[in-house]
Image (tube, rainbow, N blue to C red; front, side, top):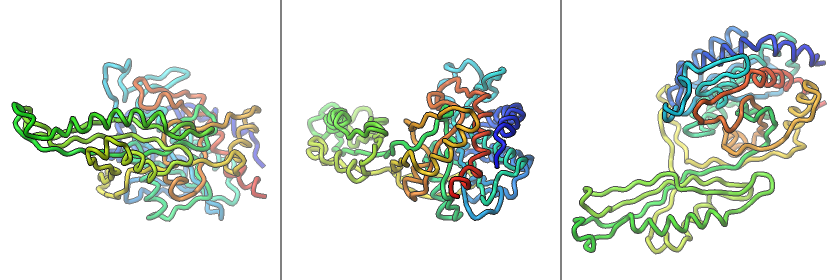
Amino acid sequence: MIDYSKVNDLAKQYRSDMSEFLRDMIRIPSESCDEEKVVLRIKEEMEKVGFDEIIIDPMGNIIGRLGNGSHIIAMDAHIDTVGVGNIDNWNYDPYKGFEDDDIIIGRGGSDQEGGMASMIYGARIIKELDILDDVTLYITGTVMEEDCDGLCWQYLINEMNIKPEFVVITEPTSLNIYRGHRGRMEIKVETTGISCHGSAPERGENAIYKMAPILMELESLHQRLRDDKFLGKGSLTVSEIFHSSPSRCAVADDCSISIDRRLTHGETWEGAIKEIEGLQAVQISNAKVSLYDYQRESYTGLVYPTQCYFPTWVIPEDHIATQTLQEGFRNLFGKEPITDKWTFSTNGVSIMGRYNIPCIGFGPGHEEEAHAPNEKTWKDELVAAAAVYAVIPQNYIDLLK
C-alpha cells in the first residue's frame, strides 16, 4: 500500500539534491558521442542512492537496477544534449547556467537531464518506502539520442537483452502524460550532372538546376500528406543542400538535399520513399532517393549501424501503462492529468516503434525549451516527476491484480 503523502513529502525533501545533481550534469558538456563524463557523474549519484546494480554497457549507456522481481519496468532518459548554437542568444553561460528558487537554466535542463535527476530520486523514494513489490526496475541513461534517436535502445534490447513490460520515457511533457508521437526519416535526394567550364555552361548538365523543380514539388507534396486525428499531419521539409563541382568556375556535377520527413499514424517508410520517387521532377531528372545510414562511433568507440528510419508509435489511452501513470498522478496530486502526445521524436521510436514494447511519457520540463537558447526547467516539476516515478512500479502491480 502506497502512502502518497509520504511520497510527496520525500520528493519535496529531495528538491535541493535533485537541483544540485542537475546543475552538475549541466556543467558537463555532453553532446552526442561525447557523454562519458556525464555518465560517470550519473554513476556517482546512483551509487549514492544505493542502486542494487550499476552497469555501463559497451555502447556507453548507464543502467541502474533496483529489485529483482518477475515484472520488468524501465524508465529512460537520454543524457546527451545538442550544442549551444549561437552563444549570443544566451543570457547565461549554457554550462554554468543560472539558478533561483524556481528555475534552473542551462543546456540539457529540460532536454533531457532533468528527467534523469527526477528518475534517480524517484528510485531513492522507492528504496526508502520499500514500494517496489515484485518488480525489477531499470533506470537507463542513454547516449546518442540527439544524433540517432532509438539507437541506444536497439542496443539495449538486442545486445543487453533488456525487454521490459513497458518503458517510461522521461522526455519533457510539462508533467502531462504522453502516449505517442510521429515517426521520422532522414531522406537523401541526389541529382547528377556533367561538369564543364562555367564560361560555357551549355556544354554540361547542371545538377543544381535539376534539383530546383524537385524542391518546388517537395514543397507542394508537404501540403498533401496524410493527417491523423491524434498524432497530427505528416510533414516534410528540406533541411540541407549540398553540391560538388570542380571549382566555382564550373558547372555543378552533383547536388543532393536532405529531407526531414515526419510520419503520422498509417504512413510507412516505403510509402514515403515512393511518394518522392513518384514526383514528376524526380523522374525527369532520374534523381536517386534513399535513406541515410547512421554509423558514428559512440564515446566508447562502438559503431552500431542503422538506417535513419524512426517509426511512429502510439498506445491506447486505456493501455495499462497509461492507466498506471494516470492512477499515480491522481493519487499524488488530486486532479486529472492531461494525456497528449509529443511533437518531437524520442527513444520510443525503437522501443515501441521497432520492438512493440509499450512506452508512456512523463517528464519534467517543457518541449518548447528543447534545443532553445536559455533552456530552462522548473524545480517543482523535478519534484513532481520524482514522486510519479516512485509510485509507478507499485501502481502497475496493483492494476495487474
